[in-house]
Structure formats: structure tokens, C-alpha cells
Length: 94
Image 1 (spheres, rainbow, N blue to C red):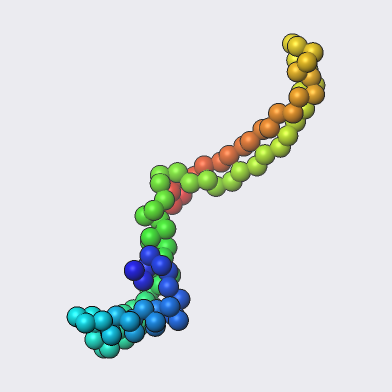
Image 2 (cartoon, rainbow, N blue to C red):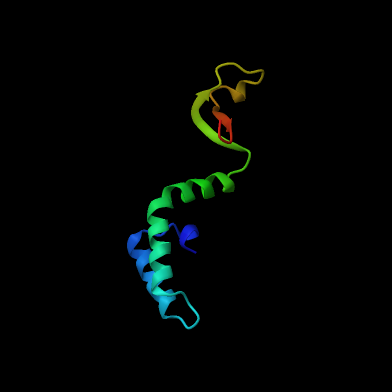
């Protein structure tokens, strides 16, 4: 729950306090250990979850523009706007 919500320190404290008050929950000592671990490893855990949730390829860059056709076989297609989209993909982690 802590990692999936990417809790900040205030949210973490409230969550752990609620867990210590639940019947069969954690002890205050366990809450302190969890809080210390989360404070020290939050960025690594968040980065790991992001990397696991991404598929094989990721969007690295995207650009687009709108052009007008200046030549065509059919006269009614001249000056028709055309969108050109250029996408650059990258492999996960590369």
C-alpha cells in the first residue's frame, strides 16, 4: 500500500498510526522500522515499480506539424491540411 500510493512522510505516518491501532495490526516498533526503511529507500522502490510497469518500448520523443498539399493528382486535394507525426521509441532501460 505504501509503495503503490507513493506516500509522502505525512501520509506514511498517518497510515502507520492507523495500522498500529488496528486489532492484529503492527506494533509501534514495527511501524518505526517500516518508516525508516521507506525514508531511506523510497526513490529506489518508486523507480523499480515504474520500470516494472513499463512495457518493452517507451516513447522517447514526439514531434508533429501540419503541412498543406501543394501538388496532387486531383485539384480538390490541393491545400488540404495533412498532419505529420514523428515518434521516436526507445527500448526499456536504453
